Length: 502
Image 1: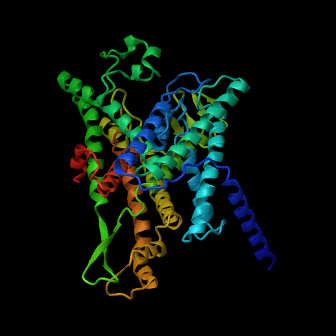
Image 2: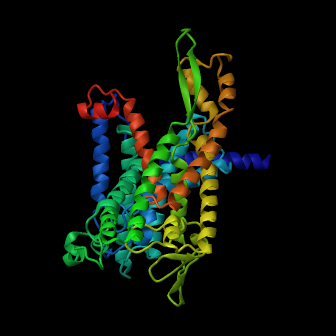
């Protein structure tokens, strides 16, 4: 009895705290009228433009530098190191991971099938995301992820700027979800990865030039390609290798382009695998529609959460780093060489294998096999990475179904509220829930496994923008295409209507 009273007191405290803090959390109000297609598109593009502008504004107090060792972090979290957007969507995703674990493990006993519990979850998620913005900003400065002077005032100024950038991302994400199309979280990832793919594939400038923050901070001579300093773009290097008869270089530069196309085609194909459940109108016989349950039921969310977890572990891996001699530096979760590349520890076995070949623009297991650089430790690393990606994606997929209103009970409520039922079964919510329970839990488990496996294999074969980044971008673009195609396109530009088939 005493335990039950304590549990009720804890629930009451959490509820009171969230209802009190909700008044002070910055938020974007929902539109009070139905937005037209053009207005929603304008708000989406406005938020995207703001994100891009802020990602090129350098944080005051941070010295310009190259952040190649954080490239994975940038790609999967839509961030840009050294800028106001250094944190990217990291705080939002990390807050989501923490809350999903707390709710999924019943530490917080919210029934997310109920609207009031989902509202509490959303409030808690925003509050925790703001808190994580501050925590991650402090971690980035204290762990040396950014080159900041050893001055307390400058360090505080950098932390405040990074935290403010995190808050802006939270608000931009909310702006897109309420006034625009899709999700800011997904859109920022897609734009970041797409930009990297274009640079890696097509840039005529050299790697040395690309490391500069702006053209004014870069030695112009270092931008001019030469035999010793080849172009960054894989396509240029492919033709250079072909002309010079260097077929090994030709193959190494062509392989990432082919694997990128392969990942794109595979993901588009798998997106179409679905189970169609027939529905009929309760009030009108002979009319109906289908309710589609995709194989990738939870879409790209499990991979985003898994990638964010890996990125945070990589960052924490540099905590407590000490010089071990011989150019080796070890932290709590990993060891690194003098260039910052991970060479051992937990982080090593939870990151994609591939040591890479200079001038190819790619580091992957397939590239190492082609160039003859693969070693036994990289095979073990590939196995542990594959296992972690697939299992963690499955877990997050299951949690996401229960926390986002995608479970059988919530879907049955949606079908019932639309005045429809499943033919051949009783026209009540309980019967529909039983039918949906045959598919949804299995799809959540299988979809999480499939998306985790695809992400890992895409990394192994060296798709541009990292395999995980390319996978996410393809799915995000496909989901946007589906969402926009279902809109009323009467007001849209003729070119948009033609592209969307409207």
